[in-house]
Length: 311
View 1 (cartoon, helix red, strand yellow):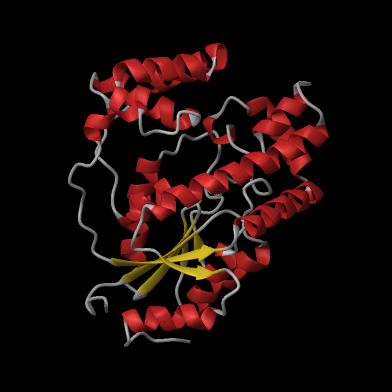
View 2: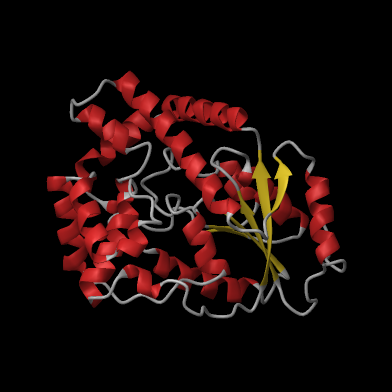
């Protein structure tokens, strides 16, 4: 089925971490003389270059990129902020390009742009701070119990090991007095573009091997030193993430360095598994093997919009 000729197209590249999304995004952006929007929620931050697998200087220079290392970990930046900023940027880019490429492994951030977020209340900063302090002092179990009590419906569907999701649901409840689940699945805003979803896939063993190799490369490139410099700020939300959290535990004397590296690999593999679960819910994604020649993906896109210009 073809897309409508009048609307611009957002090519959305998805898939698990370390599968090759960056390389594909650059090939497609070059082919269609376009630009790239990053929807990777960790690559926003300039202090997290190695641990977030930011594209190389050569890759960044090959095609214009947006939302990569353009802000600091000291500035709060929510998925709602990204939705607003990305839509504004897309409006600008679509004035000169019929196609824009968006890439990332953060499913929530991708969906925010392509489908819109549910409308949530503003959260006073003190509520978020109180919940983060509670998490630091009493752990995730206390937050889980509170969520189960105030919003059992959302508790049944959320990943209860993901403290960011738990805290998000609780801060909405504390701010509005209504369960987080009551805000879900409301009518969302229409988009003035059409989305073509391209997914990259591989056997689980291949994905896991690529993840292990990437972590080893990150360590050789200086992840340990990068994390050490960020350790004094480990309380910041941006740093409560795989690759940094484990090394912070090493610096705190809780685990050995070798164990920390193995934990990074394990937790990244778990993250990839969660990514797969998220993306499989989207029936619009057209999946391609990660080793497939890019010409076949270009042909698929051209079939959707036969009159596209190709460089």
